Length: 443
Image 1: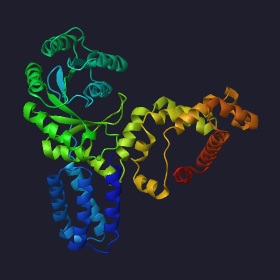
Image 2: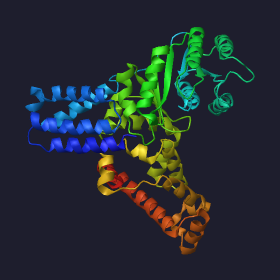
Image 3: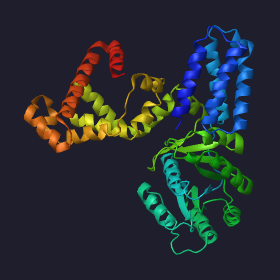
């Protein structure tokens, strides 16, 4: 989402770090570029003024101007202010009562229904026992959609089919949730194409019945400042407690994320990063600030890996590497684990400096590469997967034809596999120094 903004900030900060010393003049020049970059990213003009004024005040401090590396100090000031703009401290869910009720509100098309299922899956992974309540009777098929999603993630769902009134649904659901021991109840409410009195009256009635511990406004981040203005309307009518931004993997300019906290006074708690039910991330302001400034986000990458990778399978692979029995089937299994982390673009963007490297080297990332490799391996016989050395020209032609790829693609895969085996042998012999060499070659 922030690729364009990140490019601009990277250039601005590189220019500042190239200065031998900082003065009010070159700081003002840099902030002029910062101001333009934020306005182009659709950030509210008043927020841009506050941000640049705060950076100027801190950058003109004695500690920055007289430091040995003023450019780096300036970068730190920008980073700290960016993190503060996004919310500063992480904000967690406040779950009070049993069941603790979470209302999800927002306009039609913002992604409330899918987000309800995503949040239920997230809470379930944390050891909670959620209960889903479809209370959107305005949009056709919303109840059926949420029921299907609940089945996919194996979370119980209230049967709203045939019901005529959201108030009746919520009253019954609260009683069921309390009697059956669910500790969290997630309510998917109705939306409209825009805020209207009927919608707000319905939501206020539901709030009175449910007494929710959280009212989360679900906003489509692709709509920019419109999402921020709508959030203000919902907050004034309902008193929202937080925000979930959907479609964060899109190509929007990012103004909604950068303006939401200041404009509404409410924290962003989660971001949706894809269509699948596992594509929901806890929002960390400092980490996102690091991504925008191309400092990476290693902590989120590690957390994703911990969730995606099977520990038992990882130990088995480790043993195979030690015994030099790592096959193409094992290679494919590792690729499938990597796919769980998300798109290659999103994974690599969390590595510090990757965006700059991608621009400098004109690196093209084809998300179909992993699927192509899987198809090639699936087109091999069991013997060929165990021992690729038997792959002569005719076998490679057969595999290419069977996988819908080219012989060059097959050759490339086999060469990469052989190179990896070679590197692992070297690593095994040379210990820590071998590991250093391995990472250098991987980069």
